[in-house]
Amino acid sequence: MARITLDSVRKRYGETIAVDGVSLTVDDGEIVGMLGPSGCGKTTTLRTVAGFETPTAGTVSFDERDVTHVPPENRNVGLVFQEYALFDNMTVRGNVAFGLKMRGVGKSERRARAGELLDMLGIGEMADRDPTTLSGGQQQRVGLARALAIEPSVLLLDEPMTGLDAKLKARLRDEVGDLLTELDVTGLYVTHDQEEAMLMCDRIAVMNEGRIEQVGTPREVYESPATEFVSEFVALDAPDLPFVRW
Image 1 (tube, one colour):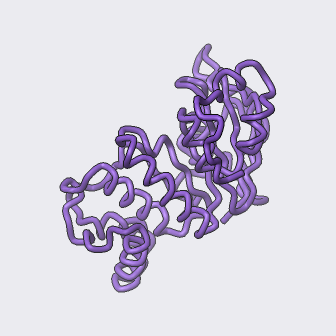
Image 2: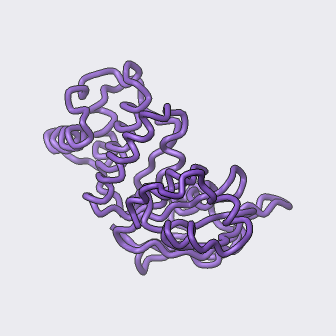
């Protein structure tokens, strides 16, 4: 895994500033949540880390390597999207093994790695299924397995629980959170869901209008908000919520 460093990252589209001077460090093995309302710049920031966007100013580094102008395919980044983006012309196992195949990994090794991850995520018996026959939660697990199969330096998750019903979301939060901890993954986790960020992430960066207003542990952000916006946005109805990453 790698340490992620964003240094004064700025992204402009014409007259619109989507990301405005963001500086953030994600330590090796840490999950940092990027929390904020729609349009605050969190997904643009994640896409800049992935290499899909080039910053107008500032730099992105993995460990000591400046990757600001390195194309996505050369960054060794694992991606999990809310849309799942699975290939419907491949089996579940084929989807998970796809990145390994593109890297020239042999068939037997691909098959073993895919099987290991599917078993870890509790869907090993679905390896030969068509992904379109799976539920949303099952498809999300396949997407996570595919992202992890390449043993990425960085894992990026963009609203991965969106669209799931509340009961399934609660179960996946626990299961995926435990898995990320077990694998010691370095990751950015984009969400607009305050409770999700509190439960899934080691630290939280609260964004508003392209800027980071506060970075801290879930307890710090919840109990000692740095700005009025953070106080209002992070406010939860359940003050006794069991923040597992406190």
